[in-house]
Amino acid sequence: MSASCTIVDVDTSHWDRLREQMVEDQLRKRGILNLSILDAMGSVPRHVFVPETVRDLSYEDRALAIGHGQTISQPYMTAIMLQVLALSGTEKVMEIGTGTGYQAALLARLAKQVETVELVPELASQARETLAALGISNVNVHIADGSRGLPGEAPFDAIAVAAGAPDVPPMLLEQLAPNGKLLIPIGDRKQQILTLFQKMDSQVVRKPLGGCAFVPLLGVHGWPGA
Ligand code: SAH
Image (cartoon, rainbow, N blue to C red; front, top):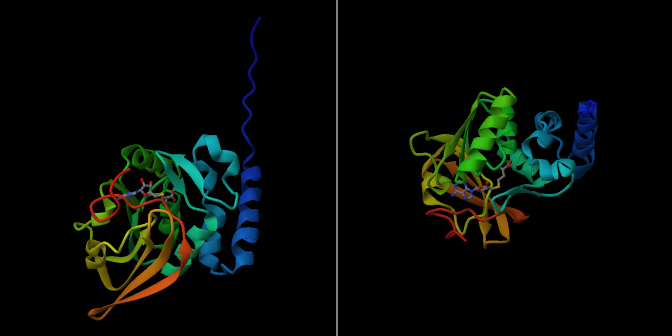
């Protein structure tokens, strides 16, 4: 007697439909109108980045647990960050907090080169694998304390911090190119204000954008580890 086993490969069109719906209901209807961002978020398969345990929730309007006490942001929050950065495709970008690699994959479509930094080695290796499996070759994943930035790779035209800091890490401001933008949630461990810093001539202009809730940025210029 032979056991039969059917492998059910969930039809890709299922995910495509959910992704289209996410773009329409969660992004376009809420005012994300930049076509490159809508196109990127309509193309990058978020479900491939999230762990299997939450895969069914990949296109829901919420943050998801990705292990190691970390989360992947709600898609709308990711879109807001991309919208504020307003990338044209020529930039060198640093992301702090690689997590699953999803936002890095979006940045990779919207900028020229992405250097992303993750503190948890397991998350970094998983993200590297996922990005490679999708053939994304303009992202380098670094295992390091991103609160120090990546001095050897600076300057950056844009820096996106995907974790909340007590204040802006001075080393990140130093690594901004002229006219560069640094986007970072600043506040306490649970709630922050998404804040934009822009380097103009010898000045840095600080602009608070609105409330948000990210996991804490750890490291020397972040919060002490739990
Ligand atoms: N952008 C990610 C989600 C980020 S979650 C995505 O698209 O999936 C925040 C991440 O920041 C977590 O993975 C956490 O481990 C990482 N992190 C926290 N402090 C850090 C630090 N000092 N340096 C680098 N990564 C850090």
